[in-house]
Length: 308
Image 1 (tube, helix red, strand yellow):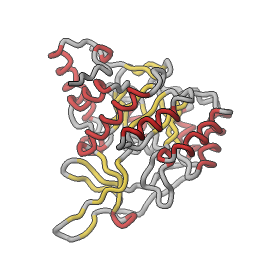
Image 2 (cartoon, rainbow, N blue to C red):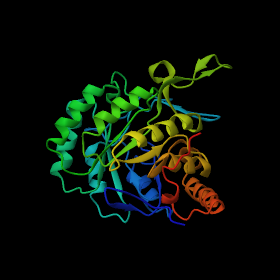
Image 3 (cartoon, rainbow, N blue to C red):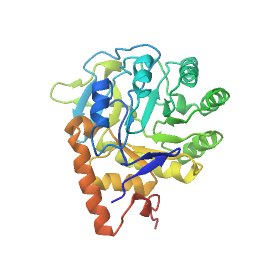
Image 4 (cartoon, rainbow, N blue to C red):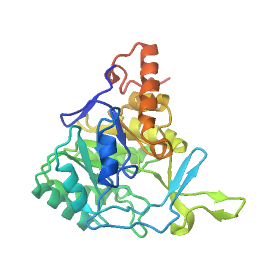
């Protein structure tokens, strides 16, 4: 069974990645992912210029059908992650970076351009959990201006991490921006920002930052994630691959992401819940579905969602 994909000519022998933010903060966790046979590559924790502790705890809460979090980009800083991805690895790496301002984004990418890192970079334009920092990718004019500035000097492979969009015109607007640039990929979606869970027994919110507001993940966001993969695949240049992220709990969910047009699929909340064994289970379930349908590779059905 061929479960491979590729981005910018880099071959991922297996379609599964981690969602940035889950099991990827330390080099030990990144090594765990790279050493797992059912993981095709890694996405680092989104790196800021300097080390960040993130938001105060409790900042993650597991729900019956997903999760809510307001982590606030805790990470060990750019130098920590660039040093790791510059090492020789048997599988592809995606260096995720997230400035706390547009100026930070530009500085981070200048540093990557000046380095000898040759792998994929992903600019996170979509974290909903940094207090006082809006999500850049909801500002279409701002995103266009930022990417113009970046691509004036950045010549290495670059993709972007996007927030969820909810209106069809918004898909049109962001695609019109992104199609102007030689992006390798988009990663969609980040968590659905600023949900609120109320614990009725205690009459309280369940996470501390922002009065309990946080990003939603897990199975509850699957429909939104699939809609974003599908809508963007219909609108983006063919050269821009899509990493489908959000809501994956079963092999059928993975199949749906690929059917909607994803090249690769990331796992976040379910990786947090099950650990690395989730990749074995998903591989088994996906392979069984493909075999039952007579498919031998992901390309047999990728992007071939039927409409009625």
